[in-house]
Length: 431
Image (cartoon, rainbow, N blue to C red; front, side, top):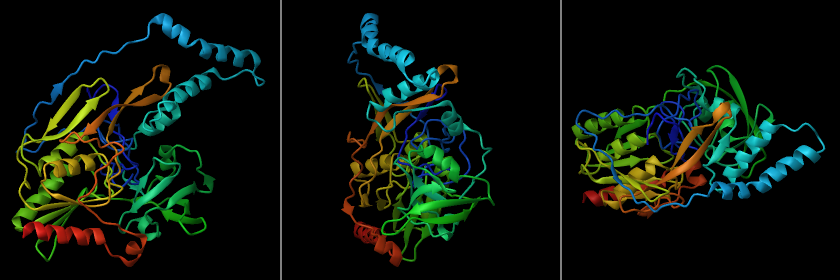
C-alpha cells in the first residue's frame, strides 16, 4: 500500500487519542487532527511514522499473493443491474411532490446507501463538509477536555477521563454517554462531528449533557485546557517490578518506550507489567516497532490479509530491549487494534501472559478515497489483521489468560483487581 495515495487508516474502536498521537481508550478529546496516514487508529490520525531507532532495521515486507480470480460484471450486465436505479431516479424527477429535487443529495444518498448495505460500520461515505472537518488543519494545538472516548456507537461514550484533566475534575466517568452538547441533541449525528463540537481552544467552555446508568441525564460544564499527553508512563514499584502504561501508538511512542525500557533495565527490574487498557491503537509502524521490543528479531508480528487472498507479512525488527524480562500485559474491552496486535503476538509466542478482559476486536484496515468533483470521500475496509498464529482479531478480540472483572464498585473504591492479579501472575512467572 502506498501511503501517498489515498488515506489508509485502520479504524479502531472510538479510540484515537487525539493529541500526542490519537488513539487510546478512545479518542482523547484534544484539538489536533493533522492529515491522516497509515494507522491503526480511529479515524483522523497524524502523518505516517516510519522512524526506526538506530539499533533496528526495517525488513522488507513479505508478500504471498494468491490469485483467486474474480469475475467482473460485463458492461451489459451492469446496464441491466442499474435499470431499477435509473427507473427510480426518473420516477422521483417526474412524480415526487416537492420539485425540483436535489440531484447532488440524491447522488450522495445513493453512495451512502450502497456502502451501508455492506453491513460494515467502518465502511462509509463522508459528504464534502464531513470530509473537510475530518481533515482540517488545526495547527497542531492540543487542547480539549482530556478524555478518551468511543465514537463508534449511537452516541459518544467516555471510556476514561485523563487523570487531573478538566474532564476528570468535572467528574466524568467511564461509561458516561454524551447525549447533547451546549443544549443541542446529538442523536443521529456522526461521532466524528460530535467530537468536533467537544473540541475547542483552551479557556473556552463546553456543556455536555451526560446520561449515566441509574441516573437522570444531567449537564456538566467543562473549561477546555491544553492537554499534554505522554504516550508512555513508567513507574518503578517498591517491589522491584516495572509498570509501564502505554496510552497510544503515536508519533513518539517508540522513542518514549525505549527510554522507559532503558530506565527499567538500569534499575534491574524483576519483571514488567505493560498496561494497554483503553489503548485503542495508533500507527501500524509503531505497532510493529513496539512489539519488536518484546519478541525476538524476525519473528512474525502480524499478517495483513486482503480480500483477494493475498497477504503481507510484518516481522519484528532487531534490537528489542525487553525480550527476556518476565512480562504480563493488562488488557480490557477498550484495548483495540494496535494494542491487540501487540497482545496477540505476545500471547501466540508465549512471551508473556495476558490479564484483564477480552479486548475490543478491531482488526481491519480502511482506505480513505477522496471522490471526484470534491464530493467528499469514502472509507472502505480493504484488509484484516491476523496474529502470528493466524488468529482473526476482528470481531473476536484477544481473550486473556486470566480474565478478571473490573466493576463500577471497584472504580468507586479506587481499587484495581486487574492490576492486583497482574502482580500476582508476574511474581509467579519470576519464581
